Image 1 (cartoon, rainbow, N blue to C red):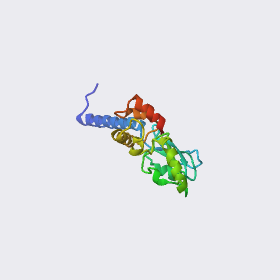
Image 2 (tube, rainbow, N blue to C red; image 1 turned 180 degrees about the vertical axis):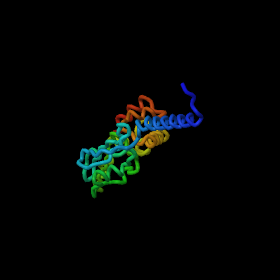
Image 3 (tube, rainbow, N blue to C red; image 1 turned 90 degrees about the vertical axis):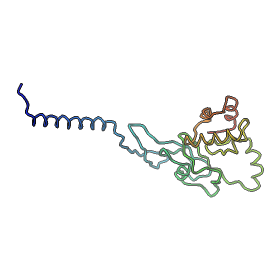
Length: 195
């Protein structure tokens, strides 16, 4: 085997380094996080569906109540309740938007309910039945949560904080992760809350 000159060693080393860099880039490029967009929606409208490595980061939410086009909609991750209401055609003239936290983050499987404004005569009778009606987990205030047996101001605040930190909740069972909520409290929550 002939001996290599110093310049030949440098050239071979440069070629080997270039091949290593190209190979590393090709390997890293194989798991590329390039977004791919697909248009699909059950309501006939199209939406951008962001996908990384084949996993969709979209949310599917049910928007109902006093809105123009109630239905199930696919929304991008990180969307807010306001985005879902807008996507469903916006509120009707009878909508009581003040009862909905439009800034809350959406969670997959969440139902967004936009209630109708009550007539003044119906308000008194509705208040009596509202005490027995299930409370929406996605929009419940700390004060509403305190009305549930076994929930005090601290636990109600913890539930609201937990919901906000996790971008909403899709199931009452997720509240089992909140400190201070035991089995008896979970039963009371299941009876009084809806997802």
